Amino acid sequence: QVQLVESGGGVVQPGRSLRLSCKASGFSFRNYGMHWVRQAPGKGLEWMAVIWYDGSDKYYADSVQGRFTISRDNSKTTVYLQMNSLRAEDTAIYYCAKDSELYGSIYTFDSWGQGTLVTVSS
Amino acid sequence: EIVLTQSPATLSLSPGERATLSCRASQSISKYLAWYQHTPGQAPRLLMYDASNRATGIPARFSGSGSGTDFTLTISSLEPEDFAVYFCQQRSTWPTFGQGTKLEIK
Image (cartoon, rainbow over all chains, first blue to last red):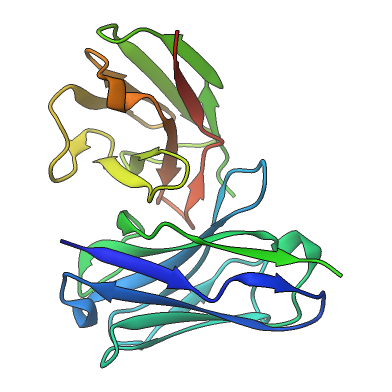
């Protein structure tokens, strides 16, 4: 069965960096696009970024473009989110999610992790 | 950005009752709407995709309908495990989510 396990969250000061990881298992990781989605306290979900199955394409929400970088290592079945220049408004639970489309990304998320909490505070 | 508005914010029902949840888009999204179930502390679960297609392993008591701007998720007879937060998501453009409907036990 599909399992996604996020890690790397914690408390970080504004302006600093953090890298999140999402370890995948139970499916052919190299064949599926992967996403990061976050939920700030008391707010709805917000899609952050997608990386194509082979890493050839990446897209970002405007709110994190230029600050966050998504990457993947298919040999380690892991997707990453490098977060730089963190702001208080980046405080959220960060989820990784698997796209439902084989060899594509159609932005339907058929499996999710349980999330990792990032708190940006001085 | 397409805004999704879910109603009601909270729905109080008893097990065995029928639940009807609504999601309205700020512009037409054709059929490109998904529904998810989220119990706090757990991973969200895909229920429906493209408005009316049940995801793998989802019980038949869950159904979805709608197109364009108005969509509905119906749970025909509530089971205890169905009490959770439900949110909708569109993929017609860059994905956005609704604010969620909390389904609570009355």
